[in-house]
Length: 273
Picture 1: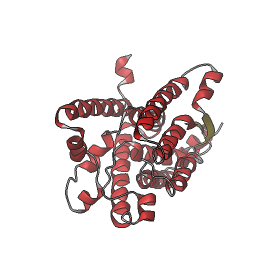
Picture 2: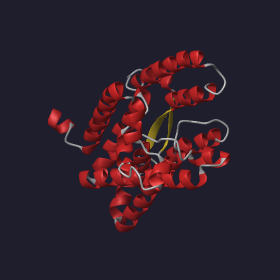
Picture 3: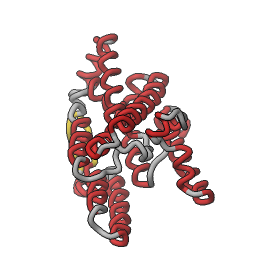
Picture 4: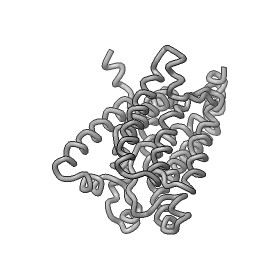
């Protein structure tokens, strides 16, 4: 049973992310979190200077806290498992890594060349701010699904995303002591919401504010509102990296549809029922 569960690359990537997060947390306790972040996180200004090039890969397996890690890994578990079965294990792992790397490169280029101004920083990120997380690669998977199975239904767990945005907004107006309390409450809500989604009780699931939508709509809902909000409030979200990963997924999906028109048409029809 365990061999079957861990035979796929999706589960292995999730385990690797968790291990790296815990090890970084432990090592950072002794040498300082700043040193760990500086060693493994992606900083656009450093990459453009030819430094720390390995962080284009290592940053994909780092996260900025337990809520960030859990939210990304839950998303990866659902989307990754689905994609891996469609395109196969080898293509999946190569595509996943490529999506994450290109997402990081686009984040570096946009933040590095346009992020120094106020508006550029809001849209693309500050070149001196570190970026971490698997979401760039995950958005690559989302883009691929949006092309291959556009009518397939998916749930966007809106509750945790709203909690993260509200926490970022309130952080601009409230004191650090109050924000510490709000941060704890937000983290608790995120964990409860995620576990609520696994409940068989529809009323319990509503606590997570799930929004059902076709896959073609998911990338739009997941990026556009955050870009608009980010124009007014600084959010801890790298939209340019998300867009980079999404672009890779969309292009690869179109490539597969052109090369394998019959197979992709069958897949699309099967998951549109």
